[in-house]
Length: 326
Image (tube, rainbow, N blue to C red; front, side, top):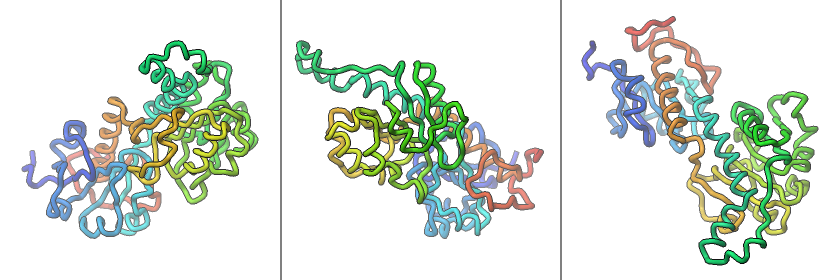
């Protein structure tokens, strides 16, 4: 067994629970949850949370870095070009939070369709007699529009189907199956009672849902964003809420994070969560385990399960030689 001081250093960039990554890294790497500059200088691996910035300045402080594992799939705060040029793998964990995020999106839709916020306020304030003033909707028999039909979008569609919803899907990067495919995004929003966003944030998807698209939304539709904050123009969504085109908005993601206060936050038909839907107990554990495994794979000379920079090339010489490389 090598001395702990001789093990490769892996650092946490943002809060990382040592108890979750320890069982994977233990005996092979030394994990530092709260790294000093000296730890960063030694680090060969880093586990980066969603709000961690891995830019030129951070990379300059980590000259020995060989792998960054992002807890999630969004890499807009990671300089992929600089990492690739340095030979640093950027590992992602695409499957770990799939079910948790999809459940969160459907939970938001249920909350808004069933008007749980308004009804809670009504009971809490002693206005039981006013319960007939709140119109409670149904998911069964309604249309779920899934924008982004990857792992999470497909899981949300599965859950919607289980609740009796008809699914429409749109994805600019790939073609959904014919049985759920909408003609285009405008067609989807015009036919959907609930719209849920599950796309990555790219230049082409920034403010994808804005004033023009919302002009075509089905009156009273619920809009949920558990993808990326930049997908949605909040000013346009607020305007659509105020004039009744949208019946409710659920937001788990914001741009920037944490967000500045926006008037939409105060609307009674809005539900807000702090980018936490993928971090259920099981989702969190799976994400950290996958991130730690990705670190270990790269340092041991094995191909990681998922990387965000396909131009990265595996070094010929592994850092950890005590593991099998098959």
